[in-house]
Structure formats: structure tokens, C-alpha cells
Length: 284
Ligand code: SF4
Image 1: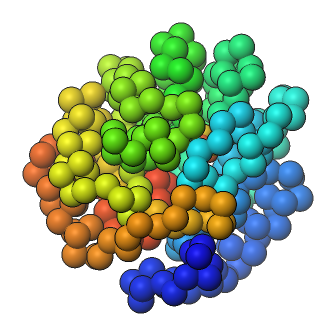
Image 2: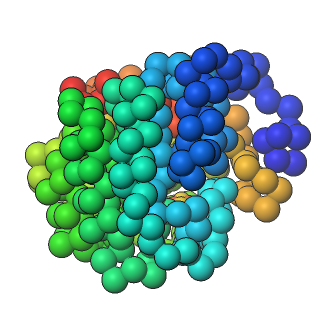
């Protein structure tokens, strides 16, 4: 049973997105052939984020070289890199008067530099066309290659995030190619740069509370400052099934534990996704 067919607990229900900003963003993104992860990831917070002029875009195409068992992005041979995309994206952001954006990408293991030069070009172009904009870049692991990650760092986004997605034990089951310790290394490289380091996990995949707390400790040791925790939702019948709907009370407990352990900012609730309320995280 997928999320769509399974009966959701009351706390997972959200209003359908509506409003002028929502319609404008959806239409313009489609016209400019841009991917908003808000739509392709079927994010439950579209209404809230788009209404607040914050949006997340996915660059480097819609086809990923990896095949994580929780993710609805297509696993296929990716298209050629479209070097006009950074300017189209920057101009769309300007037209929509977006103040804070989150940029993410598919993983491009097919490219020699993992797509890092394209990432840098995207960040600098968005900043040139939109003076004063703030940005979070949610990056793939780049195999923890420090030279590739440095290209993103040198383009100076305000926040760089890399998600652990799940606890250590479940990583091989949930993610593809990625390694738990490699992702910690990515966070460590970001933290060492002085840019705000952020990470996120999904819960409800069969992890124990103790394992969630251990992941918090591992992230803190890597220098992570901002953490997001949200409920995993199964996109289709072919994806990992939901083991459990975590209650709002447990999310509050995780939030309090994470703040007490030393995170500067924590978003923890059933509907949280990694870009939820992302504009606040530049202050971490
Ligand atoms: S690497 Fe990222 S985009 Fe690709 S399948 Fe995994 S989670 Fe999805």
C-alpha cells in the first residue's frame, strides 16, 4: 500500500496547494523547463513554502544515476548537461521575486566532476541575477571528493546541506551507492568551510529511537549545525514501505534531544522535508 492508498493519520493531512503565488510558480517553472522538487517530490508543504516565496529547484536534469529505494526521481541514463539552465533558473527566480531558494540536484556519477562545475555556475549565476538572494544548496555526496565539494563552497551559498536520509544500519537498504560514513565526511568538509552545514533524516523506516540519537551524535561530531527530521512517505508501490507513522510527540522529543545535544536549529515534525522553513537556517 503506498502513501496515496494508505490511510494517513490525521497529523499527516495538509490542505491542497492554492493561491496566486503557487499557480504562478508552477506555470513559470513548467514554461522554463525547470524542475521544482516541490512538485516532483510531491512535497506536502508546497502550499506553505510557495505562498511564502520560497521554492526548491532541482538542477542537472530529472534522471539520476543512482536508485535510492525511497526516492521517486527516475533512475535512467541522464540527459546531456544543459548549460543554459543556470540562466533560465536565475531569471525565473527573479521573475517570481523569490527571496530564498533551495537548489538540489540528481546525482550525476556519469560526469567526471560529479556536476560540481555546473553547481558552481548555477550558484554564481543566481546570485548575479538576484542580488541579495539567499540560498541553500542540497548537494549529492560527490563521493566525498574534496575538490568537487570545494567548487560548491567557493561559490558561497549561505547553507550547504547533505542529507544522511536514515540511520547507519538502514543506509544500505534505503540508499544506493551512498555510504553513511562518506556522507558524514561530506558534512565535515562543509563544516570546515565556515558555511552553515545542514543535514536531514527521514523516520518511519524501521529505525529505533536510539539509532536516531546516535545519528544526531555522529552529525554533531562532523560539525553539523542544522537538522531536519520528517516522516518518510512511500511514493509508489515499488518503493520502501512505511514501517511506522511516528507520532508528533516523538518528533517533539527528537527536536528537544537534538537541541540539547547542540544543534543550533532543528525542524522536526511529521511533514518536515529538508527544505522546510529553509530561509531561517541561514542564521544558524
Ligand atoms: S541520489 Fe538523490 S535523486 Fe538520486 S535516487 Fe538517491 S535520493 Fe534520489
